[in-house]
Length: 614
Ligand code: F6R
Image (cartoon, rainbow, N blue to C red):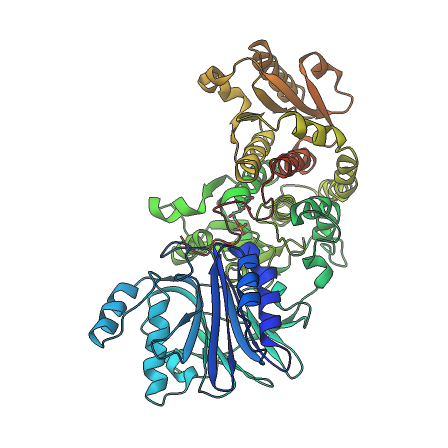
């Protein structure tokens, strides 16, 4: 949510910043802007809409190419998506420029205070006050870094701020609280960004910043302090993917590329999970086995697609460990006074690791002394940093706003967690765990086979291009798959879609079925006859009422054929693992349908990746 870039070095700051913004545009695309400092003068350009609008503005009104600059791509919170509300915001005296991600909760009081000093804000944003507050300090002779520390101590809320002072030393200054910021360390140049994708083509060496820290970058140095100016600890890390991972590589959309990356993403997430004795290991566990044996309840918290991964995880974890497991939307968790304590394991699932709802939920859980384990795809993000243990999903960068490989790898990570807990608590024998790990190891191939058979799904999208309502049904782990299929269609194709537990349909929603209504039904593998047969009955119920059925079932499941208008064949896998193959055609269907409708698949309207406000 909002992408930020800062740069000091010998290259054209304008070029580095605009290219960086292009890679961060998935974080918000309501407006974009840049500021560069050249010969002691500040120059800024900003435009509502996507970066293409900023490109046009820069072509019409070029900026100097100096080695110092910052930029921003916005997902609007305070103030609509207009040119004036776009960042950077420039101070009343034209000296300081600021970009911001997050929400400054006490901005109204600060705005009134500035008004009393004769300074009027021109935008409706919460950000602009920071530009003026910093300018007041630097005008009084305070260095920008000290000014930033001082101002940050007065701010309430969540923020990443990046600022330049046109008349100060050659430096870019930034601060973070509850909002993402990483430093890219180059040779004779340094970068700041909301995530490493912005500078990955220049350097893979990065520094993760902690809470309430101020960082100053110059051509040769990176200095980090807390808000009082005391030196602060930092954690350098090396990014294990390169520029090609952040490019489309010949695909029309990042989403389509990321769908096709799933076999590798799943394989990478499974890699290196055994120690020399063949026992399962996780990435970072700061929870002792003794504590894990005492856990008597698991609560999975997540948002959106990640919460559906959590629903799948519940079935596997309860089955393998016999620990009661609840799944809760992160945005609801702390508002209902949840019952958590030292014997509760809270599992936070987040691709970005920055989702504010999830972050606030884990903080609440930790205050209640629960232990927190994060499932995350972003090294060094806030959620894993604030957790007691982490399982990283090694999916590589997920750039499309709609999550695909993020989802499947989250499910894999949760299976690993379930098996790890089963190992620690002795609820499964070693050979049973090894057999399940063996089966998981076959999943990349199974997903690859699904991807080879996408032609019917693409054709289906063409047939359904004019539909206004689509339903998805599933039972057991097929239920979260149905929810995910519906969410993908809503967010990409802007079609009203609903996912239902197949058995629940006859308790009301079946009234929606009318002649020709498209209904996708996820049929469980035949391994568990009762489950399979029940969903088969639900399929018959909707077919009998005129639904046009698209049936996802094992390729040789002949029992479904009389009730399937279209069959999407799935490979044979065990019931608990079926979401890994069944979700893929639904992702592709939504991607293709949105493409045919002429939508921007990677950047759906009103959305942003990494939702860093509650
Ligand atoms: C939908 C989607 C969102 C995210 C949700 C959580 O395609 O991507 O529903 O799953 O915003 O994001 P993370 O996993 O980053 O916490």
